[in-house]
Image 1 (cartoon, rainbow, N blue to C red):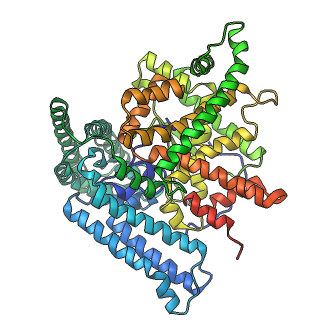
Image 2 (image 1 turned 135 degrees about the vertical axis):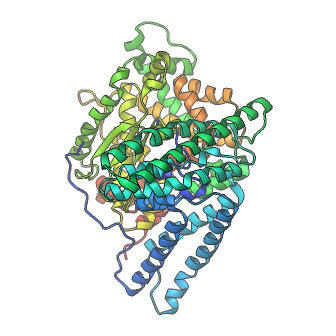
Length: 621
């Protein structure tokens, strides 16, 4: 669940961001009764000056080159015909990507000088921000392909399923016959793709091998069920139908063959104890953190900040546990050990949870209530024209995330936003009970705030309406996750969860526990990849010190192994958003308006918080 497991290469795709897509070798992320958001065309700064038009033309030229070279990024943005292209992994592609990065880094760096040489005025702060984002993205992309080289050890980077599913699920984008023709083109390339992909694995990580196997097995239903069903529904006949059936069968066999090869490799590693460690190590982790998080502190600084926040939260939880103890346990003596005391109170409260068969239904039922609250308390504008669709997570996306948002890219204005929820049928009765105790009556509300309203769902709709296409397409995961965590704080401050108009200590304790999870994510991320934290140490941190259920803790440990830096994004983004809000409140005094702050903040797309901070604090021009 979120704060959940995110597939590190699919995460950005599902959220409609491109900042992480090309850092890997493969691909992967009810109507609301409220006032509509202002509709803004999803393009970069409006061309009010001659220089603006030239600036926009250069960015458009970059995007066209980028879409062609990285078709999975085009699909993430909403250009689904790009799914027909499937570049083969290998040294030739790596060199082409490195050359692209070098050429465009130089070209974009020279753009301000070229414009000024023609007598054009200096770039606006917003335009400077666009160039800074592209510069960071290209440098990260070059570092990934030259230094990280995860395509050699992360088998889960090679998966062709997501663009196929995107094409199947976009009836408004193009007629079925056209979409099936693009699918046919992609299917033809699948056998060669997986042959080349296997050749790239030089020293694979066993953990990532197992993840790849799980996700590829989930993706088999695309070939076995989804594509044949789409073919029947489209009533395609003749040569086109025969071609699709032939290439779908070949792609299925190629995927099954690739799966068999990965399983053999996994058995060899299990027996021989070889393979690369899943840990990045200090140098790689800290560089990856700098490129991806783009915070005001480095990885070590965030780790220290998280430790301090952990101590503060535990103190608050201890006070709440003492307040709640008599009502839950009567005259029974409170444990002297703080962790035992807090844990027993949380464990007792966690008995209140939804029945497993009503889990998805309960999520669906909470969405309208959250929307009504946001509107009634004037926190943020919503968009009644863009429904949120709650669905079971597609099989090929499972194994890393228990819950996630799949939002359309800015070039897909009519696309649905999906709230993906893993079904609980993978669990035994005991595991399901453990899971539901973690997502109890109070925690499930916070999860829905985070994922849906006013969290990811709302932020990404605002981002897609931003005047800066670049800040939406190449946005920052820490801002996205940080906003979702800040949304929880926003709702609690507005009184959500109160009982008879009074603050609820139960909700306060569970919110503190959730916040402790955000903090623990950052501690876990750094500790695993830099400090060599063991599984036993990780489970102690998560279960005893952060009060997470056994199921949640084990899944978080798995997530820490298959991802890196992303777990730090929640705390990094949240702490900087909150600091910016407090700074603006102090500066603006009585003129500060919370809703205006939220909407101004979100108007900058998904730019890093430190960039949004500069834009919001700069004097008006």
